[in-house]
Length: 116
Length: 114
Image 1 (cartoon, rainbow over the protein chains, first blue to last red):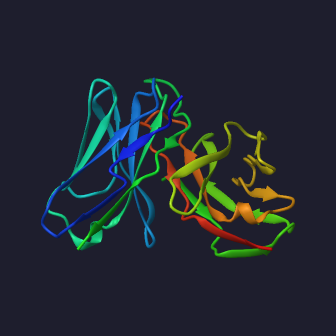
Image 2: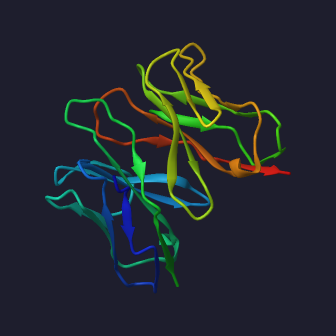
Image 3: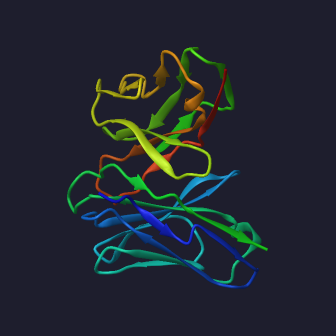
């Protein structure tokens, strides 16, 4: 079974631009979560989508948004990029169902975003 | 709120040494507990997990026991190898279904020298 894939793997943008990152979960997984990883802050939860609905959201500004499609693929968008947005963005998928206990998350390799 | 506190790194060990990375958690009820490992330039990989008190997760020689009385989930390995050099993350999943948000520790960097 193929793992979680993320595209692109590397991205360089300049301040003020916007960026869209893509994540394809493991087949059959309906939950997709996004995390930002930086050396100073560690892993910080951005948001989670389940069945095309945002189910949970971390403490990030509105410039960070996401969506999920009917095939469970997810995209994350960051508008008006700032230098501090430079990070590794990780996507994770899970089987988690409504009413069921949260299950193991399987991570993709990440997208390395550099903002100049 | 729910949180994970993990031993500060970095940790440097000689090959075949014993490894312990401490992890304690704060949560109501019985969360699920996980250890993830991240190799350079890669995403996180699940190393092991435990879903209830006194469960022992194990994989690739690593072990961790879910201790409710001490709210701990320490990672151990009896004899580390150079290939174990990576960053290790302790994480918890809350018992209540508030979504699939995991709480991660800050990570412990391990370097094993020959």
